Length: 345
Ligand SMILES: C[S@@+](CC[C@H](N)C(=O)[O-])C[C@H]1O[C@@H](n2cnc3c(N)ncnc32)[C@H](O)[C@@H]1O
Image (cartoon, rainbow, N blue to C red; front, side):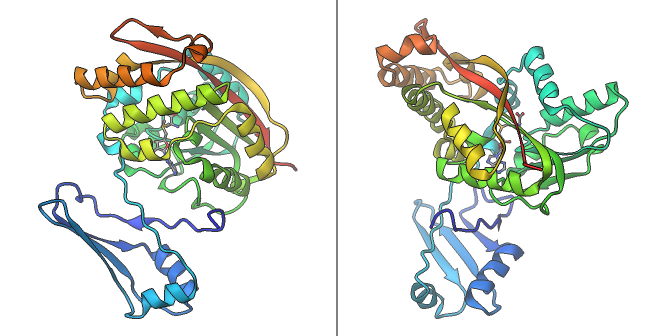
């Protein structure tokens, strides 16, 4: 059932935070979706009132028999409200993921850009990948048509104006339901993004990339890929704990770092050709680096994170993660890989 669901964006007003009462309405697309289910047109509104004591009352405004109607259709209506998380991230947090010149060169090699290519920078964040591609295109005196898509407006706001003015579009969109026509792109690049959606949703991202790529189009993915199940669990839990301490709620709830074998299945399941590994390096994670990046310089939070990490990581997995504990900092390494695959011609 989860695979069959449709993801529809909601219109959320920008000034929700700090307001005791707010209302959000369904986007036009969501209205269309609901009216298609019900074979009728009407307006639907879900409001949540937050009282000063933190209590809340949610109400659904629509036809009076809506709830019975949903029940008769055996529809389950579920609404999860989580804080964005990206809106509280500082520039430090974004810069903390340092990318080596070698890995940038490998990304460009994997992309193998050609004159006139239509490229989607998916989960683009602040557009760091697009910036690299534009610099490369300038060097080669080549024109490319770039689109940037990310679900968090707070991230897109950080895009350098020089990048913004040179691209075809900057779109707020969910990777699980991309707002582009089928076969719109020659290449899709997805750097450090797949793990941002829950495990059960990762096939949806793959399917959407497959849909928007032209036949023979390239898909390049750059992803942290824990080498074993234990490493995956330990790393995910430490990153999640850090996100919770930083109040980056959506990251804490959603993130799932797939292993290499899982990624291969995801490519296969969506219909892509065999993938090739273009690059492999070790990504160095450090709890102390999160102090200014995520934890607002609060050393008591760093202590909590370090204690959690020590409790969470069994001795037998520490060697394979290059675990180092200096007392104030815990560092470990996780493989970071660039893979390329193609949509069959
Ligand atoms: C770690 S950042 C990577 C940004 C950029 N690709 C880079 O490497 O610099 C992950 C990005 O994924 C975006 N994101 C998270 N969930 C998403 C979704 N469901 N659809 C589209 N973008 C999403 C976040 O807003 C964030 O900008």
